Image (tube, rainbow, N blue to C red; front, top):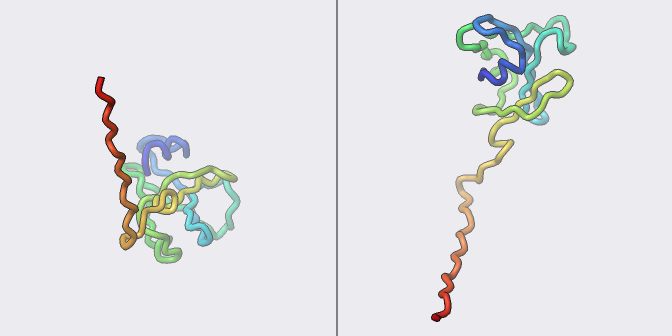
Amino acid sequence: MNSALRKKLGVIKDMPFKAHIAYDPDTGNIGLARPGEVNVGDNVAPATFDRKRYYATARGFMSRHQPKLGKYVYIERQNNWYAFRHQETESPTAHPDVKPAPKKRRKKTESPAE
């Protein structure tokens, strides 16, 4: 987790912290929220992020939801959930079989002789 997001979440340096992680299968977005700031069921346990690298184990989340692998970028905060969208969804790249249109060349215009 990068420092900008840690700052938004109010994470204290060198302290572990907890956060709920959610997945929206309709949009493919991943949500992150601090416990106590969102309403979730009593049976939902937040992930624990370590104090050194701010990593959390996501094996269960990944196998359960199977989100697209890659980089996710922050898009918005809504109802105390921070939403992240896959980078390719945010700025789609062309399919490898599709070749871009050739660039048009502009003709050089010669300035009239004086």
